[in-house]
Length: 416
Image (tube, rainbow, N blue to C red; front, top):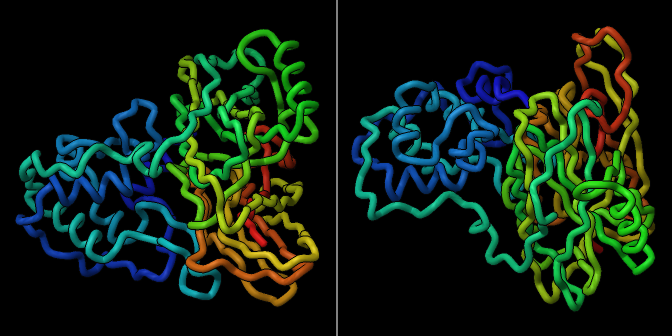
């Protein structure tokens, strides 16, 4: 996973433009204001918006830390942070959000937060009183509470010499005695250099659990190999994680049912191109509710990229007809690999735009939540289109599970 890309975005050297309704403010930055201090003001904004990637973790996604006053004040001297913030390249937010294609809950820092950060970074970097610190960076605190943690029970070191992509499935137990509704989750990879994605699957019955257990027992070591899918046909997608995500809270009054008395499968895709030789111990914190008003499902859309080489813009697309029932779309997350440049979903039934990611980065994949759910008529047809740049390729790029392959997928958070 390339830290150079993130670094280029951060200092404003990349080609990523501003997105959303907020206008870039690079030409009229707020003047320095030395009355703005770190503790209680700047630290709160950084903790809520930046430190998930700009952490003190040596395997952090971003090229430098903003986790402490010492970190932030040093970065303020050495990096063009204020320019990247004011041109709205950081934090990355790629969805069009001007009302023409969705209206999302949060597209950027507020104007007040923007002014506070840029004034502090351009000013004297005043420290203030540490007694007024806003608290630690958000981790599990981004969830209201943690009801269960999925844990394989030990570190896992992907084997070398078996290719650059390793899929490993771990049977995990949420410890539920009755059905609950998942309303939030926070995935914690401990080695961000190698974790490509994480997916949680449900095991709907005893037969599915037995099939997963058989796979686990037949494979030496922790977990079992599960290239692509979890190896159990009846397993259902529950939730997932990709680089760039922090804690995910589903929209209020919605949730995904998790069966009581049943175990889950946690699938981790490891890509070893940048492996540092260290193991991973991914865990997932879960927040449950006893009941919700709207039971949700995550529905996939997928195309089959077969991409010719030497093309600066080549596409893959597919159309899916949704069930013959009225549905509500609350949000979506898109997925491609490293050649992706942009992607969108169009409602072919009423010729409206569902979501449009004007730019794509593999390292920043997020759920985009609608301010209000979008109503979809029965049998709505949705068309997913992904754009790629294969200029640097000398042979055709195929759809596949390896990072060196490509994908074109979307996951829709739907209720009736």
